[in-house]
Image (cartoon, rainbow, N blue to C red; front, side, top):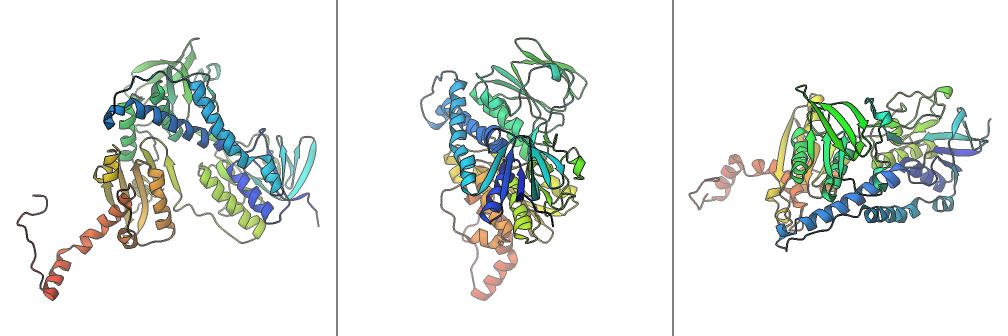
Length: 487
């Protein structure tokens, strides 16, 4: 029987890789973690979730000061933003979190850490830094990188992606954003609020194309009111470097050519898996342009080689990567067969207002051919939302033909936090009657969850049939006011 240097080898020190490393080592497996960058943490910590949310909060604070008069405060004449100081704060937050993702911490857990670019030499061994190491099981969690679209002139024109945007020396006076996915719209709003003139170019007729149009349009209207200019149904003809600024040439749906000029171009048109140089083709691991092909247990075509996180091309969320890492540990280390189930995987786009969802939205339900009913509540009817000056947004609950929840979307203040209650409700199969009857503190935004459940139950509870029954058995006398509801 062949012996191996390690029980578990991991390629990639992001959310998925760190989850596997921590779990495997603490369960007694001799574990090696390989990371190509100089530090652990992956894109999320260094050029993704953490810096973006830090920047978004800074931009919101500045925006709130600019609209102080809306809250009965004196109008303020604010100085321009010093982006160098914003960048310093972003780096300080990253540094604070980096301590939890440090080599020292993982070494204390028993994980061996190596830095370099590995390549498989056979299905159990990789070459790194001039040496070959073997492991009984491997997991590829090498993440993804910004995709460079096939745009004429882009290879000769300076542009930025999420890898560079958080370390700019100064605030750009203007920016054209190519793409309108979550990263694109989050950065468009944040930089607009800080003082950058922002234009967004989108190929389709809707931003956030995976979301329901009514919810996505709600975000677009807010951003447009704040100054972001949108060019929808527009194709990029080409880009060019004009020296002191960049040019983006687009064509509208009607065929009209438009030239956009800006100091910076942000390219946010998708991601691609980091697979180059791993030699997966040489060891028979199946993959395509989207990523490594896996089964529900996160196993590749080589059953002892797993894949998790962005590299699978499935759900490119940090929390999904961590979840998948747990699936790998269960199967590879504990040997308890466990399958990934994404039925109620939550997500959130951190614009202001936020847009969060779990399960199916109307677009997904329609594509699946499901019959469903929609129940909504608006934030204009939530007392806490009004007190905080938040009037935009709604919650939307979808029930299937059996009156079971299949999805919830929330467009509104702190939607990502509000969605957490639905994570428990849907994954725990909690009845809507339980949610509707639960006491929520007043006034809170969370009451909107209770109210949308009540919107489904109220017609059943206060029906004519129930009223007639109570009148018959208990001799109730009926209405005390002649005005009908809505009169």
